[in-house]
Image (cartoon, rainbow, N blue to C red; front, top):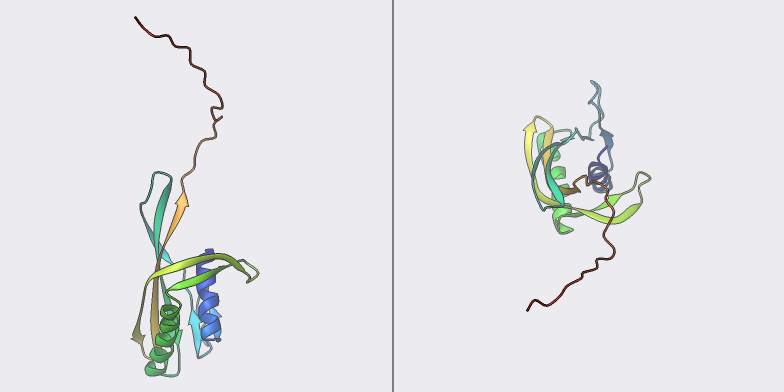
Amino acid sequence: MNPEVGSIMGFFYKVFPVKVYTNEVPENFAVPSLYFPTPFSFDGNDTNKTFMKSYSLPVKLFHKDSQLANNEAERIADTVRSKRSVIPLLNADGTETGDYVRISRIETRISDSGVASIIVNWDSRYHYDRDDYIAIENIEFDNEVKK
């Protein structure tokens, strides 16, 4: 799992501690609950050393009715906003790494009866693969002044 998705999942769970699904939602799923699918991404140019990937994660929040689902989705989104759209990155064991993921956009909407969607967007930067090379340590020049 992408560490950013795990961190977003952990953050949402702290705000709304319910059953969380990641693979598929079973037929008799718990209500209320959250479903985190695999995010989709697209790439873009960044610097001469890094490339950027923009992610979008459409989280589904299930509740007894659409209004309750939307209220909880808005509460989660407002909590993210109140933290300046910064979510701490977590290690696999749940401890904070000291790094953060900055959410570039978060939106909520009612998507079905008893279901609200929280769409989370963020950008990540990754280093290009670089060939190993031996760095130049010393350079000597012999020069003369031309007459």
